[in-house]
Amino acid sequence: MIQLSQKIAANVIQPRKSQSYKGTYGRVLIIGGNANLGGAVIMNAQAAVQSGAGLVTVATDFSNKTAIHARLPEAMVVDYHDHLADYIQKADVVLIGSGLGEEVDILKTCLKAVQENQIVIIDGSAITMMAEHNLDLPKAQVVLTPHQMEWQRLGEVAIADQSREDNNWEALVSFHPEPILVLKSNATQVYLEHELYQLSVGGPYQATGGMGDTLAGMIAGFTAQFHPLGPAVLSAVYCHSAIAAELSKSAYVTLPSKIAEAIPAYMNKLADMPLSATGLDEEQEE
Ligand SMILES: NC(=O)C1=CN([C@@H]2O[C@H](COP(=O)(O)OP(=O)(O)OC[C@H]3O[C@@H](n4cnc5c(N)ncnc54)[C@H](O)[C@@H]3O)[C@@H](O)[C@H]2O)[C@@H](O)CC1
Ligand SMILES: Nc1ncnc2c1ncn2[C@@H]1O[C@H](COP(=O)(O)OP(=O)(O)O)[C@@H](O)[C@H]1O
Ligand SMILES: [Mg+2]
Image: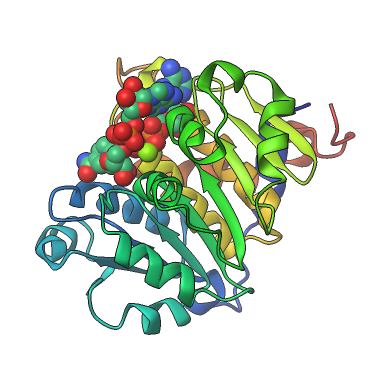
């Protein structure tokens, strides 16, 4: 097991090159937010934009359009009932599921449309529906972001048994292609290429609705611009909780939208950090 540390996170975040433009930093398509759960995609999108994704589009129930535009003018908005496969085709990263409710046709359209070279982050309601409807993972680079109950549903590992690493690996190898698993709890773990990473920042000030939606948006934003995929996921997971930990010094509860607002400053800090401060000049493994 490897401790998920600031140096792993900082290693991923590089100063931006002057010869770049928005296309350099990736196109993210967020699919989610039914008529009642539009807030989830607002939190996804806010986190993706603040993480530095080059272009962010939200495909959602169209009743959410005005709210998204009002909260986040940087994001584009489309109706997820129209031409969804075309929008998917143009994306580098697709994040599906936060606040998607029971819109299983939208999920099926997405699973069918994504291509092998695309990154697909599957969160929230999409995980629950994949379990309920027995749907296969798409042939793409998949990141699963379940909380413990969602993993119990999809991975069929009872919450009580998830504390044993073996049980989670055993469930993971039954998926094809083998996804990256971000198993969220008060002690979040990342299962990535035969290695288990343990998060040890963060705390109960994060136990509030929308916290996972914000994390999923950060993973989308990080994976759109930083490559390869695995370290970008690890960096997003670390930064999300490290920002919450910083905010908790002066806040009883750390709201998801406040975390999103703090992302650029935190990334700047890690991008500017001298190697000696992050320990990057030392061995990576702990
Ligand atoms: N403002 C919004 O629009 C919000 C929308 N949300 C969306 O609502 C949908 C339903 O998600 P929920 O997670 O609320 O509902 P779920 O029914 O999927 O999961 C909640 C259930 O899991 C149990 N559970 C066990 N261990 C848990 C753990 N470690 N973390 C969380 N729950 C645990 C809870 O007790 C509860 O019974 C998702 O698509 C989600 O993205 C939520 O993110 C809340 C905010
Ligand atoms: N007690 C806690 N300590 C640390 N992190 C927590 C705690 N409770 C929740 N979190 C974090 O908050 C997030 C919750 O995700 P999730 O349940 O999907 O929220 P939502 O779907 O409401 O956005 C996860 O990243 C989880 O690790
Ligand atoms: Mg969630």
